[in-house]
Amino acid sequence: MIRFKTPLLIALMLFSVINLFAQGKKDLNIVFIGNSITYGAGLADPAAEAPPVIAANYLKQQSNIGKVEIANQGHGGYTTVDFLPTTNGVFKDVEKAAQSFNDKQALLIFSIKLGTNDSAIEGPRGAPVFPENYYQNLKLIADSLLKEFPSSVVIFQHPVWYSPNTYNGARYLAEGLERLTNYLAEIDLLVQDYAATYPKRVFVGDTKGFDYFKKHSTTDLQPEQGHQGTFYLHPNKQGAAALGNFWGDAINKVVKKLGK
Image (cartoon, rainbow, N blue to C red; front, top):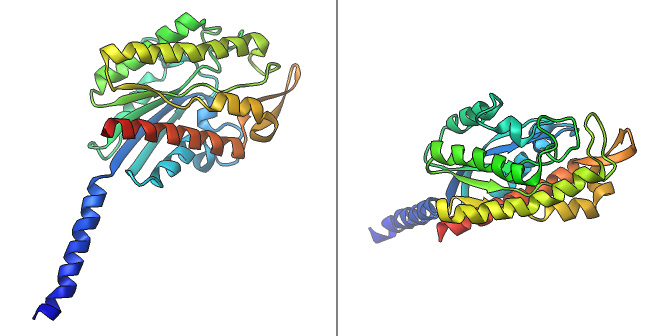
């Protein structure tokens, strides 16, 4: 009799181990808030190649992560002003995206990468957004999300480098790039300030992308024709994959922190 029960016993034990392992994994719902870079502008198939998709694929391969559902709320040309809950912009779409996930028990993450269009000299809504206003805008967005979704976390990804001759429909140039560079410290300061008011709810995400694209501009960014020659702003397929992996790695580090 024992001989016949042994395979069944082994199967039950194996099932228990697998089930226990699965229970240790964290399911994620992620709303990616951003501009054309988040959307995947210029890519042949944004639905498969945009950074949020790559980030999700990266996360699904991690041993501590279970199911991953995403909503890409990247909009070309948008600034922090467009996402403010007080400007009749797209904040309502972000809310709907967060409410639409099927698994309500999964960890809800808002991954925010804004700043490129804010930094422009002129063109996008509200530009130029000066560093102190950029801080306040991000805070207004995050405050609203944290209050409306009490179990959520917010991750601010650093914006990425663009060439100082960038000038398409909007004018960025060296002045814009300098302003963008100053945003990085504002993000870090904002997260530090949240440590007291919303502990373990707001985090700095990726910090590698800015220098990476500065170093790999001609291989990982799309060459685009503008008013001051060929400029580099949007990631190509290779660059989008790199950025998505940066985001995925940063998000997973936050998940691990929360699990401690």
